[in-house]
Length: 130
Image (cartoon, rainbow, N blue to C red; front, side):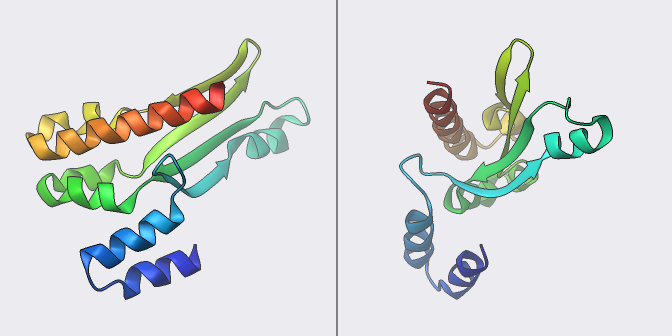
């Protein structure tokens, strides 16, 4: 991540930024920014019986910048949080839809990007679940 941050900082044009981001994202056009092992914290409190639960912060800086340029509040929601939670009835995958979060801000162009981002997240989750 340090190298990525340095590359982002040194990008001087939108094309440079897109090259850096494209090199860091996979086929999903998304990248993992951060991972929180919530289950590990839970196990410290409850012992070995605690369940597995991970919160992933996932996104694409180029898509975020496209949304924030016309709907600044989108920066409060991007990147997206995905929760992977192992429960008694199986593994649950959840996230908050970006389109539903920013639709109230009235930017059609940001909403279009958010809808595309949601489709990318859903494809990623379907692939992970498959």
